Length: 81
Image (tube, rainbow, N blue to C red; front, side, top):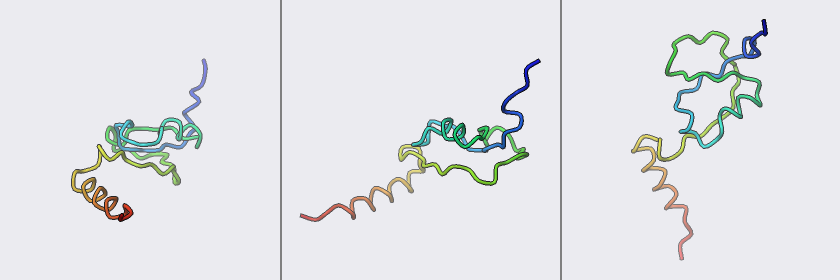
């Protein structure tokens, strides 16, 4: 009987859906030696990794007020002609 290679990995509890992130979170988890679990589907946080990769939510998935504020900030940063 083969053992599960993920059984001993620490867990990265990240709210899904994972496609909302700019980065490829599955690849980041693999490179960091972590097992990734959608934090929305379980309250259990056993074996949670103390250090996890940083990720960025895509603008289209951010709350509307936050996305609108970011667009305003970016417009302010545009060079004036």
